[in-house]
Length: 214
Image 1 (cartoon, rainbow, N blue to C red):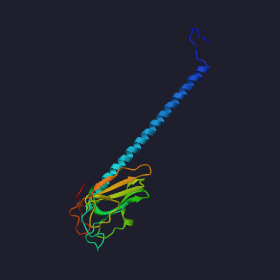
Image 2 (image 1 turned 90 degrees about the horizontal axis):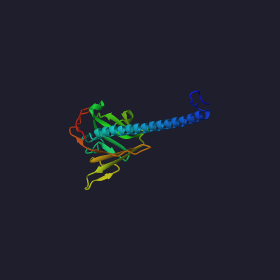
Image 3 (image 1 turned 45 degrees about the vertical axis):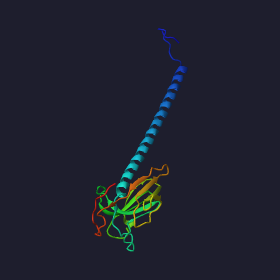
Image 4 (image 1 turned 90 degrees about the vertical axis):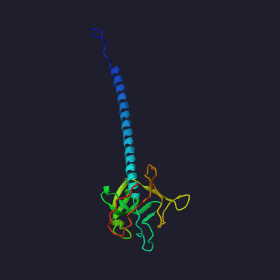
């Protein structure tokens, strides 16, 4: 049908075709937006995991590198023994809690996998031989972690070698390697240089010490 000025209108079929094309365009745009949102969520999740790994690694390097030079804590029969022991999946040591984390001075530490993830338990040293872990405070370092693999560098022999557990109470490993894993990924190993803190071998209970570093 033509109007008086010769212009032609749209037929019903043409309108249906246009509407169908617009629907396809909108569907494509919706799929693209959903894909973009999924990518952004994936990037945010990876960044969050990387940030959690960075914070965890920095905290462990700070705490684990502050090992106490005090001897005799593990056993009265071994006065030369360091308060440090490790296996393939857990670690216990006597060290110094950095003051900026809310508590200073000598603390017992235990690192291991618990149902919630990678957990650090700590208790202030009061001169007792072994801590009461049931009453110790805890810090969840990495939620969802299901694996902790520890290795220890033994430099008492040349060349030095890496072992899966540390039972030599008269010595400390040169370095400790910690590899943390989740069900979906395994993170790069964290290697911490072990250093004894001078001034932490006093027998006075509750003495504070804030030295050391990486």
